[in-house]
Every structure is written in C-alpha cells, then in structure tokens.
Length: 397
Image (tube, rainbow, N blue to C red; front, side, top):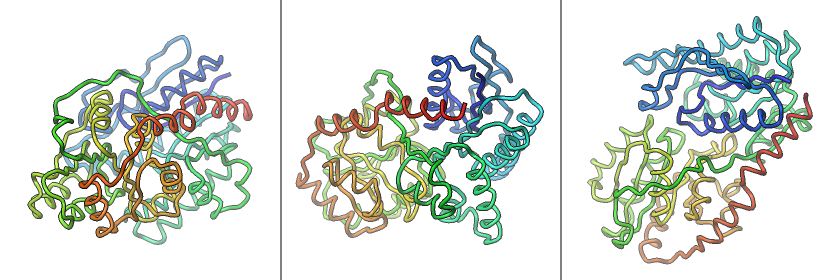
C-alpha cells in the first residue's frame, strides 16, 4: 500500500508541519505502508537555505523527492514564483507518475497546491486527504494578500473543489470546522478534528539569554513574527502600562513583521523592555519558554476562525501559562479560561492588555504549572494524534 505526502516544507525545514509530516511518514511506515514524500529544498528560514539535498533520496520504505526553489534577493519575486511553481510541478508529478492508493496534501502554498493536487487525483482516481493547517483564501483576505474580490472568489471556488473531492479533511479546531461548513454543509461527514501535538522530543539546552532568578517578569512570543499575529499591540500596551523595569517582552524568531516591531520599539523608547532573539533550535527555544513567566499567543481578528496556533502545544507541554490575544468566544480562549491555563484578552485591545501587564507586575496571577502539563498530556499527546490519523487513513485505503 503506497501513499504520497505532499507539502512545500519537509524536515529539516523548520515550520511545524515539516516535522509533523516526517512523523506521519514514520507512523505510516511502521504500519506497513510504503511512503513517498514530495517536497522542496529547505527554504523556510534563512538558516534552512544552507541545507541542500539530492532531488531523490530512496530508502527501503519509499522516496523523498525535493523540488528546487527560487531564491532571490527580492523575496517578493521569489515567493510569487514558488507560489505557482511548486503546485504546477506537483500536478505533473501526480498526473504522470506512479499511482498511489492515497495522497495527503496540506496548505503550503495555499489554495493552489490543494487544488492542483485534487485535480490530478481526480483525473487518476486517487483518494485524497486534505490536511488543513489553516484555511485559505479567507486568511489571505484578512491579511490583505488577496485584496482583489474576483481573485478571492476564484480561489474560494478552487479550495471548495479540493474540499469536495477529498475523501477526508483534517482541521485543528471546531472553529475551523465551522468555517468550512459555512462554505458547504455537505462536508460534515468528511471533516475530522485532529489537533497537533508538541513537536520535538529533544533535550532542553540551556542558553544564558537572561537570568530567570533576577526578578524580571518575562513574556515570550516564540515563532514566526508574521502579520497575522498583530504583535504591535503588545508593544503599544507595554508603553501604555504602568509597569517599571520589572517586565520584559521577548520576541524570539523572524518574519515579515520583525522590522516593524523593531522600529516601533525604538519609536516608543522601549529598548530596555523589549528584546529580540533570533530564531533558535527547538531545544534552546524550549528553555527560554520554560524560564519565562508567560508565553504569548496573538492573532489578528478573525484569524482564529481559520487557523490554530501550533505554538500553544509547546507552551502547554512546558507548563508555561499563556497570554492569549484572541476573540473570547473562540475555542482556544474558552479552553484557556475554563482550565486555568492562562489569561485571555481581545486581540488589539491595547488598554486591556496594558491592564494585564500591570497585574502581572504585581503578581496578581498565579497558575499551577504542573496542572498545565497534566492538561497537555491528557489532551494533546502525540499518541492521540497518531491513533486518529491511522484510523482516518485506514478508512480510505
């Protein structure tokens, strides 16, 4: 029984799904499937681009194919070319390559990858699993990537075709499930909620970025510093708050919003309260998160309906309380509040966030880290993910 896993990024590339896909391959292989992977050369972060692999690496259990990517100084041009290039080559690969019993595809690049994969699968009669890490083009409309109304409508038609053809659809939350059902109620029976799990079982590595016993209250945002996160509201809230030197915000990672965050920090003269740490290996990042008082999840308004921040699992696995800046009616907010995992504030509400900062500086909040870890183990274990995924796979093969 042979299956093909498709995604633009594959380990050792650094986005979460690159590692998830590697785990899925190992899981399927251990259950007697022959598994191929179709991905690209590492390119997610600057550090990833130095890792190069052969086009085809074969082992006893299948092949890993890596397509070339466009890398230019002008990132917008490179991103645009890769957005079209990868889905097109995937379409040709499926159409004229060997026939698989099933193919899984995720959402990078968004919409077009799923559409061309579904189209090729339909032509060849191959079962498809659509693994939605996020839901496009709705997110693209929120971020401004799909400003044109006719482009948005066309992409929505493309993605609906993918959903309607797929045998199974995986989403990460009830909010995401409801968003797909708002498109087409007939998708009910094929949508499965299988949330992610904590990535990386490596040992924590200590780095002396700060002394956790120095009395400073630290909040950390770790991961992609993108424009979906509305991170500027954190800096504005810090400037508005009445806290003194004893509270610090750490941004660890890189992304499109990094320069804007640096500029705003300088503009508000908050260099002593806001720190930027470059992207770190998982084992290092985990130590910084563990030593912080709270970890931040922040999303632009409406995004929580179409995505679920995977960093949540890493935070919970380390027992670190969460400051979530998302809509209070969302599934994520309700989970945090009802299980005493942290605090919630509406995204973009600078005044309310500033009040939380003041309360933190006065040690108003007290969370049981051991209970947070227990909650994680009960609800987001890798074992639970594997059981659900294997059951879903067996249903279509």
